[in-house]
Image (cartoon, rainbow, N blue to C red; front, side, top):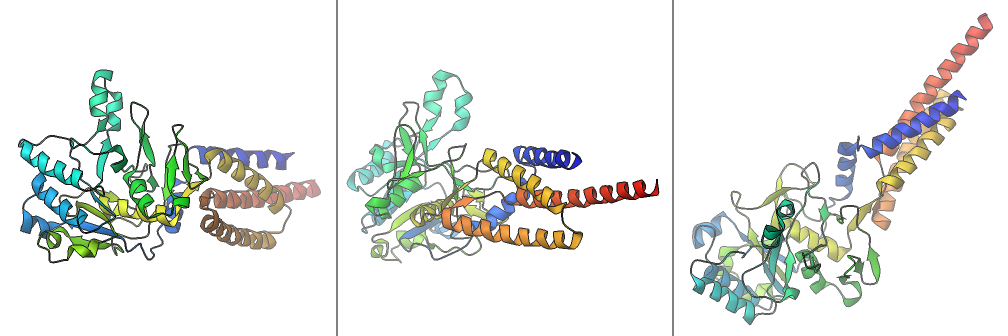
Amino acid sequence: MRKLVIAIIIGWVMIILVRVEGLSMIENLFTDTLTTQTTVVESQIKIVAIDEESIEKVGSWPWSRDDMAELVDTLASSGATAVWPNVLFTEKSADPNLDNALAEVIAKHDNVYLPVNFDFEALTKPEEELEQEYLKLPVIDIPIERIGHNNILVDKDNVVRKLLPGIPTLDEEIIPSIDIRLANLLLPDEEKISWNEDYSWFRGEEPIVLDETLQIGLSYASSPEDPQFDIIPAWKVVTEEIEPQYFENSLVIIGHYAANQADQYTSPFGEKQMNSVEVHANSIQAIIDDKLYNKMSDSYSAFLVLLLGMFSFLVFQMLRLRIGTILLVSSIIGYTVFVVYYFNSYQLLLPYSYTLFALLFAFVASILDQKLTKDKELKEEIE
């Protein structure tokens, strides 16, 4: 009876631990190890960086819209598959001619894309303010097929680990991530990302499963310490030090890269910050490589560690200490190998630290139970 009670206690402790995310720090470290395997990236993805040198040569940031129009026009005329300036044009310029210059370039090229941005904090505001502030649309006319949201969301520890595929407007029209828009340009028809009004997502005909936050995990191919993507200073494009033909058939992302100007985020690689354009480039690469992943849901994870914790205890308490120790070590190694294999094969991340804790908890509990049993038997013999 006592053994059953201990097994039940172990099970409930593990359920509570999973529910309160008690081992989230360790779990995230393991996840980050699996999802930061740098590799050869798509050579067609190029970043035109508005870095310190470009700002020094071209002018202080923000650049005027006619300067941006000239840069975009040069790149779009090069035969690029897509040109995407990661800059929000949501406010009209004081000089309408500047907006007109950019609008003419947008109208001239069908390979230019613009970002939109959703302000989720606006959802808490009165309804009359919500419509104007929730969605930040460009003031430049552009077909909806050539816009995508550039929102980057962070986890509780401020690390970017997920991609938000799309966001519904107040009119219930879904605007996909700009990363999906651009990746689709390089994907074959049978693998393109699609969606429907029910917010169901597909890769070709295969459904894409989102988590409870309507996001999906993102694997990184390039680190901030050693960027794998081709990064070209914007001034070299403006001065034509680099021939425009270099960007032919490329996805060209234009974005801030100066340390004091860029939107920077913490990546799973560590403390060094990653520029937003690098996050988007990694997202595009992950979509192309089909390196998006899910975690097992909390409910299934809790059920798994519950069963494993209870079963392990019942097994350990029947074994001698030495054999139990060997089984524990073997189980940890075997489960680690299995989790890595399962992740690489099915892009599904099983609970890791919680499972190891369940094994250790069950092992320690079995040792204590065996000691209590021996003490009781010894006491009975003495009496």
